[in-house]
Every structure is written in C-alpha cells, then in structure tokens.
Image (cartoon, rainbow, N blue to C red; front, side):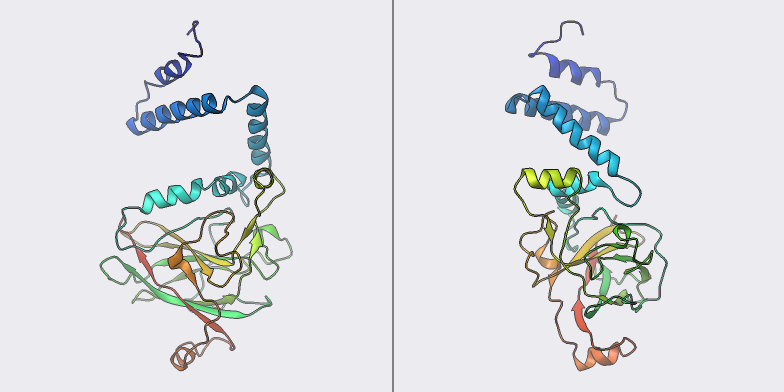
Length: 287
C-alpha cells in the first residue's frame, strides 16, 4: 500500500476489505466505499469540509443517549430513514404502508387493556382511535401487540419533558381475538424536531423548517408477520405536505375531527365523552 494515489486509492481500499467472510457485509462495504469515494471526488471535498462533517457527527454522538438518538434524527432529516423503509416495504403486496420509527421510541411501556384511555390529565381534545389488524389474506391478527406513543399538548414527548409522567401518552395494548384494537388519547399537535444539536445544524444549513404534522406512533408485532411501524397523521394539519422528516404517507393521513356515529358512541360507551373518531386498519406483511 505504499504507492497509494488519487487514481488507485478506491481500488486499494476495496481490496483491503475483500476478505470479509459474510457475503452481504462484503457487498455493502464495497459499494459504500465506492460511492463515498465517488462523492468525495465529484464535489472535490476539502479537508476543512470533511472536518466540519466529522464535527457534526461528533456533536450528534455527544447528545445521543437511551432517550434521544441524534443519528436517527439526522437519518430522518436526510430522507434516509424514509428510503430504507420504502425499500423494505416495496414488495409487500397488500400490506399497509409503514413509516418512520422516529427518535423517541422507548421499549418496555406498561401494558394496558385494549380500549384504554391514555388521556390522563392532559389537556386538549380527546380522540378515539380504532380499527382492525390483519394479515394480507384478511386473517385477523388476534393478540397483536400494539405499542403507542405521541407528544403531549405542549408539543413534547415524555422523554423530552421531565414535567410529564414517565409513561404519559404511551401504552402497550393487545388486539382482541378478532384483531380489533381501540384506545382513546389526547389529540397530538404539530411540533418541531429538536434543533439544538446536529439535526438543527443541518436544517439551518438547508434553509428548511423543522416542523412535523401531528401524528400518533404505533409499532405492531404479531407472530408470523414483519414488524410494522406506522404513524397516524392528522389530514388537516398545516404541515401535512411539509413534513421535515418525509414520513407522511397518503394512506396514513386521516381526519382527526370526525364526529362519532350513534353506533360508535354505543360501541365505545365506556370512554368519556366528548370525543372525535379516527379509524385506521393495519394490514401486516408476512415475515
């Protein structure tokens, strides 16, 4: 390797990793090296610019912990998270579209009964979210696990706000034997993704805003199916077509202000009124 030059550096680096035992690892690393080197050549990246990029990653690492992952936020803001998700679901014929996990998921949320009201002491309108979870052959997925999380009426997730209860507006539910799920919650609001670290630097450099439309996160798991990560968006939110992290999918944008029918009022009589209704079914792809 003593004669490395502008012309042979890429070939030399690729060859250095050619002994990777795992074929998929070798494929990914080889293409990554080639594309990164092509990018550096194309933009004629300077040492100062590369040092600045490393500085952004260093600041992302410094702020990342168990409750906030700045690297996920950077991936979201660059559209990489959205693309990875779209690639993964591209061939899942008949399944509902998935979308981003986001940086505020926390595992281990306590399990509550199907039909639980998560509103608690939160202000704002109450909405009831319900639907069915099934496979692509329309078989109901009884017992499917549904993890729910969202922001509070002040725009913050509980992991961002020490003033909120630990599991505020979060829960784990189980669909009934027919795959039906239901829960009530406080209506989420649009919010700005954190801009106090590397993600904010990227947003400002691109002269972009950092707003996300109001949404509720769900992660659904069921035996024999791929993990399904979704968000339910407010169709009438002012940022529905300007999501900072490119997460909106048309099938997941629904009205948050639907008035319940008499049948729905009767069906959900145990939930405190008044409330609006949001109905979303989820079809999971096989694993």
